[in-house]
Image 1 (tube, one colour):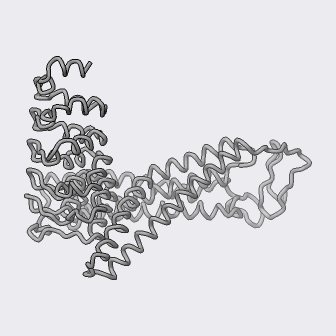
Image 2 (image 1 turned 60 degrees about the vertical axis):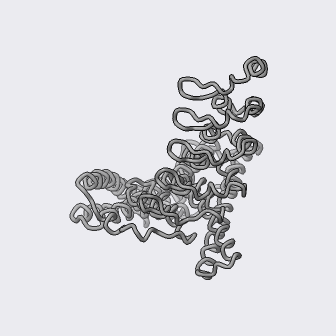
Image 3 (image 1 turned 45 degrees about the vertical axis):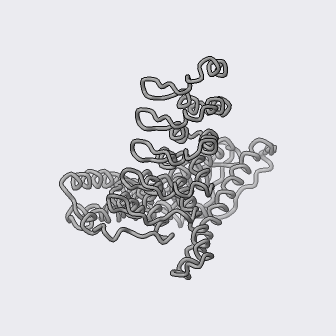
Length: 446
């Protein structure tokens, strides 16, 4: 039908609607390369912007249609030089909307080198926008290209490192770890701050609105830390299994002989000490206005570790101390699944961001050393080694987690569990162990 319409009215492809968009604008949204190629018989349609100044190549990049974007940039001359009303090129649009495949194609093609360091109406390069939106994958993809300049100053006097630093200092939530990781990655790759930016004045200058934000956030974290401290304190005096009532060990925890009980004590202690220290910092923060952001960030990190301690305590109790893995496979798999889910929920994003940002360190610094940039030779070597070791450990940890889950799942579905008769039960014989036979529960010796 499109072919028939084109033959019936050759100029139909150049007509625009009320939004200034042509048929090619809508064709690129579908991702159908055949339809786009048909409309490109009249290549002039690729150079018609809509009311927002967006050309079809910009629309394709915003929609994440990498194959269509590639076709437009290869079939239409100088299509990569087209700018919208905000002076953004195709790479700016792809970065701002997080379209990884489009960014990857442009960064890997030497013909589009001029796009890597181009500025928009505010002087922001694609790296400025990636840091502003906190997209670690896009940042890693850009920084792996050594042609990307890490220290370009925009019209506001900020380099990408300045943008990352300002973003991390204004982040009052637990996600400040991601912002801090981006800052550390830029610093590790020898990015520089703007010498025209007086960071000291902007870092410690707090107006009334910002001070109220500090107060509200600190009060919320203080409530959480107090609750965690109270819960972990109570858990220390109510161990699983209770206490021994009679004998020489009367008053001692019933499960103290279990090796997993030490893990329970360690996790609960970590939760209590971290939450208590965070509470003290927050109380001190409420009494002074100096270095409030530093105290607040440190307290948020300690509360995060306290929550981790609580989760570990729960997992030790449910999977090791109170669960009979020989007869409760459903409960075992459920507990392991919950543990993996909680671990990924709490650590997954941070570990993923750190792993992604370690890749450009391992790639960019050796390339700079290979090209003769020996200004910080030994420091760069140590950075590369540290990043490589971290990636190896993360990869091994990921593989071990996957294999452990697969082992439990395979054991549940494919291993036959033999029926245990009462005559085959081997009772424990050490002092203080628990004997369970049917509904009878006894303590050895009894």
